[in-house]
Length: 94
Image (cartoon, rainbow, N blue to C red; front, side, top):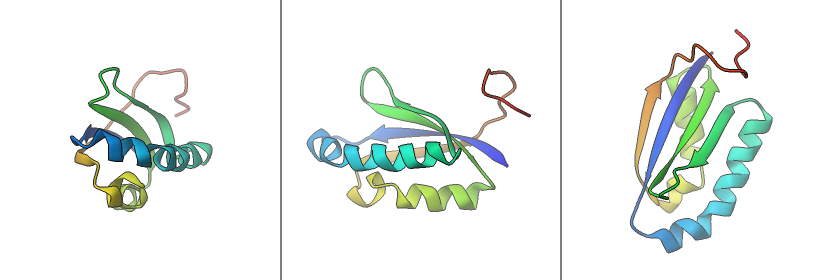
């Protein structure tokens, strides 16, 4: 399994994003219950968010991102995907 840090940069249409946000959060919560999302949340200035995923590979991650309600709503201007080698943390098991 690989861990990915995905940074979302929100687009200018906050009204549209806020309308889609409940569906996005429900989707992310369902992934967290499955152990796919390790941590998620918006930045305090509400310009974007950070989500940490644990999946088999980048192809799997891209499938997950395409199913996120934010994707078809086109409310994120950038999805920055980075492989993340977490070394320390109370939730790390390996």
